[in-house]
Image 1 (tube, rainbow, N blue to C red):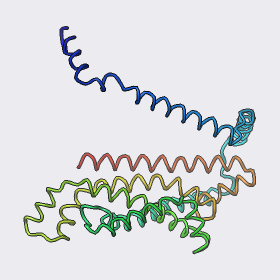
Image 2 (image 1 turned 60 degrees about the horizontal axis):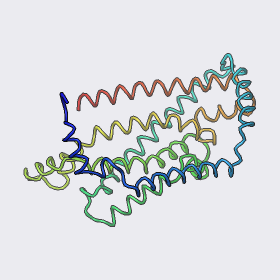
Image 3 (image 1 turned 90 degrees about the vertical axis):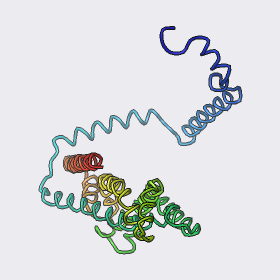
Image 4 (image 1 turned 45 degrees about the vertical axis):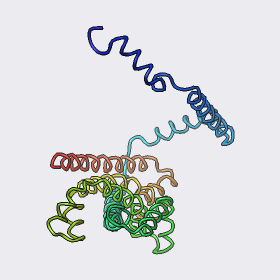
Length: 280
């Protein structure tokens, strides 16, 4: 051989590490059994949930008819109303994400093992994150609508509550991966516990936290549309109303408005994240 390992070297490697080159019979059986169980579960789900591919074909024809009715998109006499509602949706997403971020950033320190040594406090905070994340944002919207009534305030609270659990978990994991040498440097300079967090932890996690907040603002723009359908304010309420009244041209205009807003936010947040990566 001109380059690389010779045949004799390859044979010695195979003899030295047989499990790396020849998977054991037990592993092959386990892999085959896993594939069989997964395929069986899929077939059971198809039969149990009454899949009907004939209905799927007729549904596609119905969808094509709806798309035909949506052309050309038109706001009707409600352009100003839709633009205002879209702005309200963006405000719900922005305020809800910032509110969740503020509380999650503080709670994230309570869930990080390298910051809080008290086991029971960390465990309780993490389980709180899990409990909140386990409830969908739409359910939180329905809960807050019954608490504070219909409107964008309920939407802000729904997004803030749902994102608190998700961001708290992400922030705590980011804090746990920091370089401990910066904390040691602050401690060696005579800094206390607060100084260690302020000058040793926060500068390291701040770019990660900012990037995650930007992503959640982008994602919550779509989520704010969905929770608006149940009465939490924003453009979603108008979208549901036009679907119920079969105003398909206005439905397509609202959908395009939402897509344009999401694309614009995605573009801006991507540029900001790229700028933070370069500066970091």
